[in-house]
Length: 246
Length: 102
Figure (spheres, rainbow over the protein chains, first blue to last red):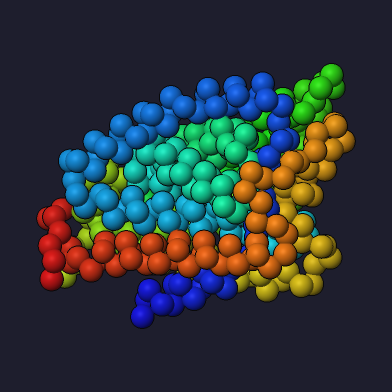
């Protein structure tokens, strides 16, 4: 029943999404190639890390599968933002970075972005490297660092996850801004153009960042109730923080 | 977690749904043509600097075929997420950091 309800919910939101992914051909080949070079080592390290955690603990496989599906869906889910009159989507990489680590999160994002670029015309193949860098690398590491940093100073799980989701979203769009400004500027000065793009993103991404933070906190808290053992294994929760569910 | 923390956690679980509902419910009263930010921002600024988006390698077109492809993606993603969520949550937590099948 839960499965059917979840699927029906997803069917209701299945409309073409247009947002942060950089479309085919927008970046010159030199810049597109550079972002691939930056992305590849992170993807290789992420695949190694994924192999390690899957080999050590078989129960990680369903968690990776769940989060991969969640990132894929979230990152092509258009959400109307009334303050801007436009649509955009969250990234979902904060959840994977918190629960699986930033390197595995890069791999999950890369797979989701590849499928979207191949079959949904959502982001380009030549710009895939740039999209992996912004959503996968910058988003995942920003979210992970914020979460770990806030937990280390005593923030609760929910508050740390909320801030991680918020910063992941904003950092991803900031990275997209810089990639775009660097790629398209020609002879125009870099910083004024970057500022102009960032300002144009703000009306949409400010509220969406709050939504992404809430979604991240909701998912992490829900999993901490349903499977706290997994969160302890991934060092998201400490053993003494775990509530006994019987 | 203390009782107080559980209450706060509960709020965080409900907040995404409430925010999403609020965004969608207030959408019709806002003026706008609901373009994606890629069209409204990214492609517009790129065009001003002489860069145009090209057609994707596998072009699903613009009409209902694209909707259909997104529908299929939603179904596939939804089933995968639901399947793995069930696999994860049908376990019962014992309280000592381990899990077992009921």
